[in-house]
Image (cartoon, rainbow, N blue to C red; front, side, top):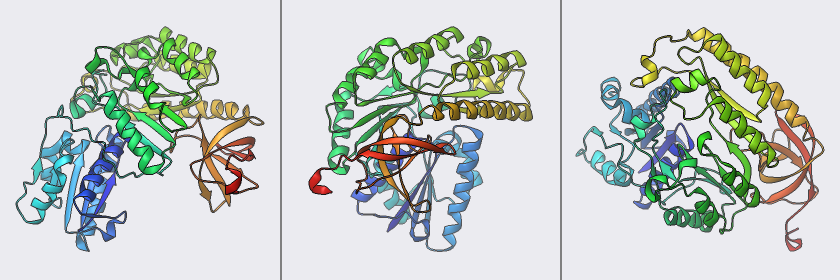
Length: 447
């Protein structure tokens, strides 16, 4: 039977989907990326915030339409089902089976049971049960892959439902992570490893009694990869030792993704963030003093009791710090979280107005910083051709896939996808760079 998987949400969810695909493929199922051709469709949902929940619900409804054609069975799994299993069963009679977030290793058998009419309609699981798997069918281009180094979260931010969905923070063993990375390099020729977890900066504290992120990076750096990128480093765990190590290791991208969430001490305290305004300002200054870094962050506006003064402090920080990349999210009042019970909830139109104001400010900052790179030479990982523009494109070490800036460029000789080339930046095209290859690194016999 042909099975199609629709994956929603974050990169960690994508890895779960890739694990599912591997289990199913190894059991003899044929995989398809076209839901119209699938006899079984699996939707791996996100349930983090309201917009993500709505996207998941819309996708379930969209995929259920295929049951009028070729599809015989619709399965829904992931964070939304883990969080709202009972409600989904009652609200979606068209779904044949619901799974939580930890049953993927037995998915082939559950599918067999479904086909022969022996399955339950729902399978719940303990959110703290872990089944880390190195088995993957990549859904990214083969030159980069996400690598999950931990699951769950212990930070207990008052706005966040992740601990109730994904459970306690659990690191994988260093040797297991390195073995999986080695296999990805062998099987796919991976050139960029992107380390993800809810909090990458806390890696190892739970199983080794101390943070061992640098030790993990040291071992991954021995592999035949060009870049290693770190996503989601909580500010309280980013210290000078880590930044110095990143600077000293040419394989670690000078790219720091630090979700600060706010700058007002009042709001940070209400969020249960373990960092102060002063510490955030000092952290940004310290990183900048070490070299040419891209600093990315996320912020929540309209958090309960966020006053005009609190918002003004955040606006001033964005203006002063001049971070390279920022995401701004209107606060989502999530069921069961402490923040959802706070008095002083902010009107939706106020949240959106504040969000728009910060995006407008950040857009100008970002473009000014990008203009400053015109004339510079950067290493670019070649990713493909934009056939509409008739031009090559890729990313520099300062840009993560799918969320950041692209580099469009021309070249006078053949290129190979997944290779890194020296590109001189000549101009901007909106929020992207345009340049020219000045040094072709392909061996002469390949030209």
